[in-house]
Length: 121
Image 1 (cartoon, helix red, strand yellow):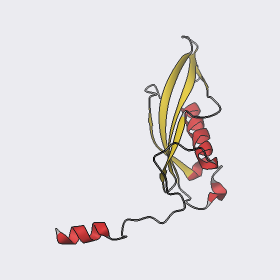
Image 2 (cartoon, helix red, strand yellow):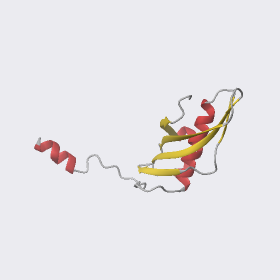
Image 3 (cartoon, rainbow, N blue to C red):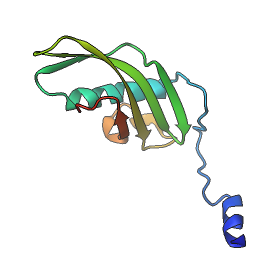
């Protein structure tokens, strides 16, 4: 057990990144891109009989550090067979290129880690 405590206290699992994260909601160019990529992902998963309307900004966005983000937002969903419904969702998304922001506009450099609140997707 002493060995485990020494490993935990060491820098072995620390990731050196410019994105340190925090507990408070933030708005940065990367959180805005994360919001946009989450919305585009949701649009791609909707069926042909469903349309979506997204607000300009999320309700909240957090950086977890190391370019991992949590986006909390609303979506207006309209199906051809039903009225418009507003749903809240949470999207966890990761930017895979780290400190290199050159590819941040390309969705292939991002990965959706989880999506909740939209059970129909």
